[in-house]
Length: 156
Image 1 (cartoon, rainbow, N blue to C red):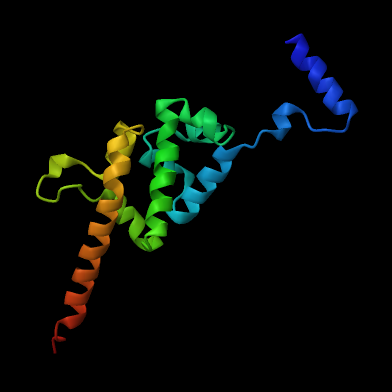
Image 2: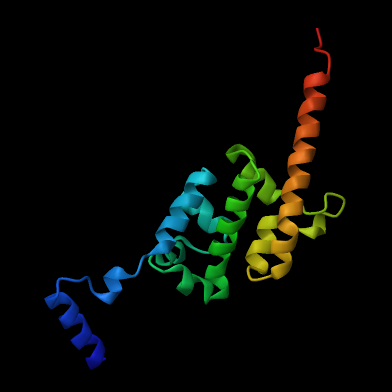
């Protein structure tokens, strides 16, 4: 502890920020990005990640390394990675929530949604392997449904 204080005083003398000030608080950026991309409130985001708002607020003050070290806070990173992946694959912001909440296997409701898997198994490597395929399938299915609706003759 004394060594850390001494180092902090030396840094201050030299006009450098303390170690704590230099360390970026990436959690705040992650939460902000997710709120924007999902068009969600902090209450909604906390509910999606199955945490309370106080927990979500505490995550804002942590670095990505700190968030990754805890299974519960890893949910935030996994959701962020998924949202970034979906954006890279050109999924519209308006469809992100649908994509997260739809069952993985529509024929089996017990299969759960992507979001439920993120909450239950945020560190699963399987998720990273299947997420791109699920996004592609979702986009293809949405495109097909949209083109079918546009191709129908209007009633009247």
